[in-house]
Image 1 (tube, helix red, strand yellow):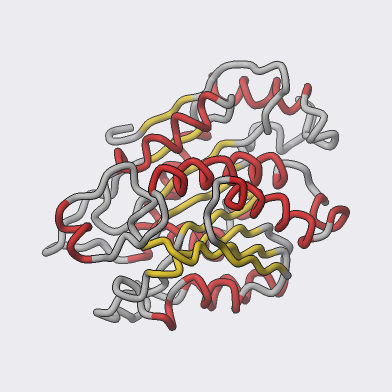
Image 2 (cartoon, one colour):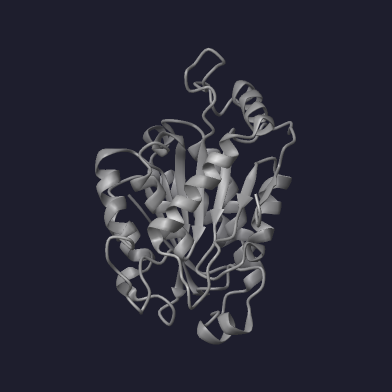
Length: 291
């Protein structure tokens, strides 16, 4: 798959979760900007993929097409026999998934995903969960990193629907664990009405919001371009600590969502405190909400 990275095909003694983390990039952000997350997850034994969206500032791709591209990447992962076999073995061994399907189950071939995305990629991940009826049962959870439901340009219409609104409709009917990591200093890049708060507000349940109060929108990237640095304030939070804590929270969240029924048993407050601890231990200022 051109522009993608798929890693993590190895066994671990602690048996990481039997799922794949798919990382969707922000608008005009290269997949290489998220390389540290993929490498960290891979080193932890979790298969992870990140991909590029072919577009330019003068020829942007609409949100529905981006969602279709993500669906294509999911299908590509589904068609990898080595990946299927690896996850099948892990599901059998994993104590975190006692109800994992066996070879005799009709769902044995289905790969489960945790969809993760930054900025517009967060919106695309949410849209895939809301609009991808055929793939919905494969999505174990959503991790949205400073998601943007719209830009200041305000492109709308049927090809650019509100992911926050659709996420609200979905979570009113189904349970879907959601982690949202927001940047407290992103108002120069994302309209307040379309930032992380809109996703958390619309989500009906099983949602954790962690706001890094001193972080800017692009601080999550491994490296920013000059345009990104000039367009958006990076904030005062230490970039290396933000990335490290975010990567740890993604790994922890992947382990949590891999176990069906965990949110009903543990409660979202317990999950929120477990995830927010990563940021507090890194010395980052944050605020946390759960529901």
